[in-house]
Length: 180
Image (tube, rainbow, N blue to C red):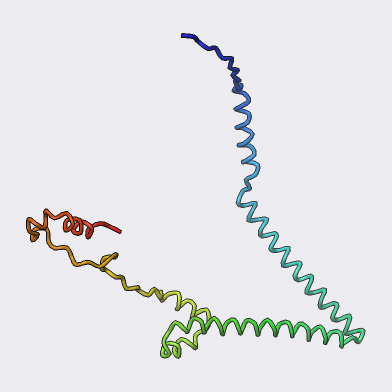
């Protein structure tokens, strides 16, 4: 028997390096986490700044309108107001159309009598009512056995000795109990 010597280089990792890496990961996780109180404070401050910004924008718009009124440029103000009105009107019409089609699609699931009763509800109430009534229709299940229809197997105890000995009859008898 011959022994084969192999040169295998093994590297050992100093324990100090491993410990330093795990400590760095823990420190990084601690640095990334933010206390909830600081988070809540930041969110509150952000909301306050957004409110201030919107109030400043509103004041600036009011000031611009006053300046235009002083200059006598009523036509510019009137055209801007008309544009805003048309945009709002278009959005309102789209929303009304959405509400109507959504209500109709929900009401189509009900009989005419129920539609008369439910038709006066707002969309929100109608959706809640519709969601509370689960329309799961029960599908009838066929309990008969699948596959080729054959005569029901005769009871084993009623089979004659000749039938029990006949391989063809025995094979048909066993096939009735196999899953397909």
